[in-house]
Length: 192
Image (cartoon, rainbow, N blue to C red; front, top):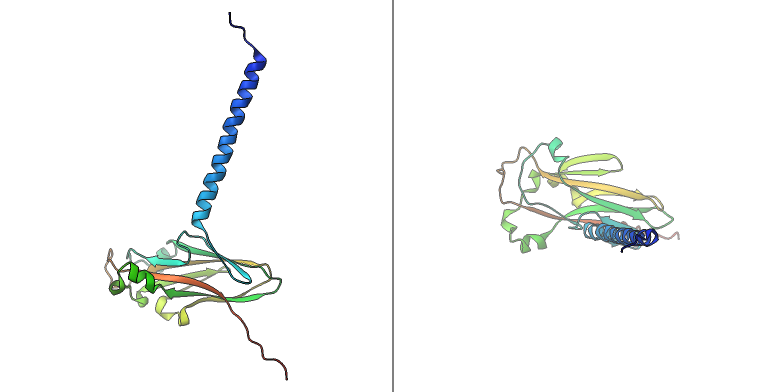
């Protein structure tokens, strides 16, 4: 005849629940870190930690031509950068948007580039949002600023094709760019 042993049942259930919780914790940890690692790309300089929050890293692109107004373009996909100053003194930095010529060659679309006057760029940094056409950006300079000691700055960049463009929707034209964050080194003359 079978006798019910309450103490054995409780121990067995505690072991089962503990095992299930352990698997859940390990799985959650693994899933979180797997997606986090694929999403962010870190680049470090002497004094700045730069994090590109997309899996493409510093690469930006327009692969699908859809001419839109600025208000709609501001809701398009953003490329986010976090810049952190590791020093106990302020650092000057700049963010550039360069054409990615290597990507044009590897994608074989050198002859299908979206003209720079048809591309609108939005740069949001420190609460300010500046919108301009790509061809109006001088020396590829999106942001030039100073970051305080141990400060962190978030920058959001969006690209879209302007509504007035003559490029038809669905065209196979592309834009490939690269974001570059650099520290501005100052050269001071010594007193004579």
